[in-house]
Every structure is written in C-alpha cells, then in structure tokens.
Amino acid sequence: MEVKARAPGKIILSGEHAVVHGSTAVASSIDLYTYVSLRFPTPSDNDDALRLQLKDVGLEFSWPIGRIKEALSEKDIPNSSVPTSCSIESLRSLAALVDELKIPEAKIGLGAGVLAFLWLYSSIQGYKPATVVITSELPLGSGLGSSAALCVALSAALLSFSDSVNLDLSHQGWLTFGESELELLNKWAFEGEKIIHGKPSGIDNTVATYGNMIKFKSGSLTRIKTNMTLKMLITNTKVGRNTKALVAGVSERTLRHPEAMASVFSAVDSISTELATIIQSPAPDDLSLTEKESKIEELMEMNQGLLQCMGVSHASIETVLRTTLKYKLASKLTGAGGGGCVLTLLPTLLSGTVVDKVTSELESCGFHCLTAAIGGNGVEICFGDSS
Ligand SMILES: Nc1ncnc2c1ncn2[C@@H]1O[C@H](COP(=O)(O)OP(=O)(O)OP(=O)(O)O)[C@@H](O)[C@H]1O
Ligand SMILES: C[C@@](O)(CCO)CC(=O)[O-]
Ligand SMILES: [Mg+2]
Image (tube, helix red, strand yellow):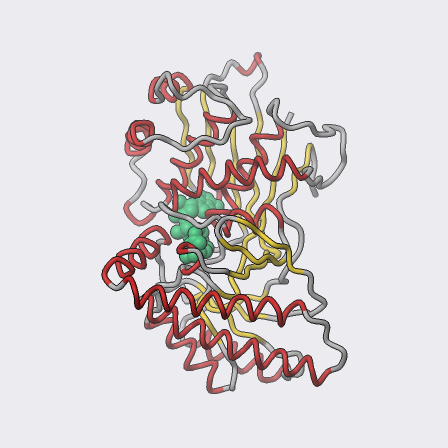
C-alpha cells in the first residue's frame, strides 16, 4: 500500500518576521507543491530499514530501524494523536545519526530537513521500516515555504496510515482531510518546522495545510475571502539563505533595540490589517480595482522598508527593487529574505510587453522569474495512482 501527499508552497504578502513577534501577516498558497510518498515493505521484502530519498538533491539515506529506536529515549513513546516537541536530548542523538550521513558541505542545510523527517516519522509511525520519497516543485531555501510544504506533506502521509485519522482508502484521486485531522497534521508539521526554523510563527505550515489566502496572528488563522485575482511576478535571486539564522538575527536586533523594534512590528501589524481589508473588500468596477492595486503596491513598499529596518534585505533584493521600479512596479521580499524570492505586483491593466521587458531585464541580472497561481488547495493525499 502506498500513499502520496502533496502540500503547497506559499508567498507572504505582508508581515514576515514581524509575525514571529506577534504582528498580523497575510499569506497565500501557490500552485507549486512538495510531494511525499510513503510505502511499507511487505514481510517477504525482508527489509528492516527506514529509507529516505530526496529526489530534488539526488541524495538517498537509510537507517536500520533499530538504530533510530536506540537513538530515542524511553520517554519518546510514539503517539500519532499527540504532537510532541523533540527534546534537546533526542535532537542531539538524532543529529548524531544525521552527522554520520556525511552530507556534502554544499548541501549541509538539508541536515535540518532530515532531522525533522526522523522526528516526525518515529513519533507518528513508530519504529517500522518504510521507504519515503520526497520531490518538490519549489526552490529549496528561497522563501517560498519549502520547509513547511515538506513538514505538512510528510505529516499528512504519515498520519494517513495511523490510528488518529480515518480515511477512505478506496478513494480515487486527491483527497482532502477533515477539519480536526487538518488541525492535528498542522500541529505535527509545526513540530517539524521548529526543528528547521528554530522559532517559527506557524504561518508557513498553516497556509500549506489550509491553502488559499489567510491572515495569521499569534498562532491563529482567519481565512480571507476575496474576488480579487492578484498577479505576482516571483523573482528568485538564487542567493542562498537560511530562515533559522535570519529569524534569530531579527530576535537579536529586537533584544538590542526593544522599543524601536516594537514600533516597527506595530507598523507591520497595521500594514497587514489594511492589506487584508483591501483584498477582502468588493471591487465594483475597474477604477476601484486600479485604486486597490495602487494601495496594495504602496503597502508592499512600506513593508519592504520595514523589512530593511529589521536587517533582512540583501543587495540582490535591492537590485530587484531598483529594476522593477524602473517600470513603476512595486516589490517586496517574501519569506525570510536575505536573498531568496521577491514579489512584484503585476497590476491587471499592465501590458504583457512590460511584463516581458521587466522579466528579461531581471533574468539578465542572473535571477530566475517564475509565475505561480496564487491560492488553491492546501494539503491533499492520494492512495494509489495520482496522475
Ligand atoms: N524537497 C526537499 N527535500 C529535502 N529537504 C527539504 C526540501 N524542502 C525543504 N527542505 C528542508 O528545508 C530547508 C529549507 O528551509 P528554509 O526554511 O530555510 O527555507 P524555505 O522554507 O524554502 O523558505 P521560507 O522559510 O523563507 O519560506 C532545506 O535546507 C532542507 O533542510
Ligand atoms: C520569516 C518568517 O516570518 C516567515 C518565513 O516564511 C518566519 C516564520 O514566520 O516562521
Ligand atoms: Mg521555511
């Protein structure tokens, strides 16, 4: 029996980083997915290993299942219905298993993802041999929520073969979970994100779980309903960065300048709240649509300025901002910043020629532009053939 799960990546329209400190943020899923397939061996396979294939980076790992059991303490009793944080001791012993893999230096960031995998797998499925295959349409470590899409898809696949979830195994095609199951898998994914991000707000796993557009503050989500079709150009600067280090950097700055940073976070909160109101308000005619787009552009520019205050912009991001401004287009970084991806709003009345020109100028700087549909379903699973 095999199950495949998929979870979408995301863009943050406003509020990244500040959301970790209690401000409102607005995010949306995009139609680029991470896929996780899970298969248990049959007794005749005589296989006692847990195997992990990371197709995007061409790496494969395996562990005799007994070694994972040895690494975890007696206190770590697998229980799929109770999302549990990985203790410091368990994290240390799992990290020793990951160290033995000798991941090439250039791909060392993958270690955190493998750690999250080992914790989620052993906590939800216990000590059973299996093969898990991961593939993604998302660029990894670029601000489009690849870590959250991984944790959400992994939790979905693992939970679908657990006692905590009741699913119709004969269903053909992609299947969504019920509300209480989504809540459970989102909590497990958050535990995985904690291993990768250090101190996540939970926005990325929440949007990957529920899909569509959401407003998020202090751990709780409000679904945003809109009849506005936002079009964004996503520019990947291809500058590698690590969300955990960037989030920690903002926290350190906050410790050094608590009052100034509190004002920055409060300004971001107001920007996100205003943005959500604009996106949700009905647009009766083209004029008001144009007005709404201009307001969104201004709010994006303001949010970008505050992200610079937090110290998470980067020379490559500034190059994208300057380039798009030449075409009177507004941009902001998305996700953790420090490189990664930048969003540019493409107003409805913008001509295709301008989009082509700005895209080719950005690509001539060595960046990669991608288009993705905004919104769409959150996590889904499929038993058998999903094609
Ligand atoms: N498909 C994948 N295969 C293997 N590891 C992955 C995959 N997707 C994510 N990861 C893990 O997640 C890490 C990237 O997470 P990180 O949080 O730094 O970036 P991101 O999630 O893409 O961006 P952001 O958090 O800003 O949205 C990778 O280094 C790896 O450990
Ligand atoms: C930078 C951050 O705000 C968003 C990363 O996509 C971190 C988080 O909220 O966990
Ligand atoms: Mg991430």
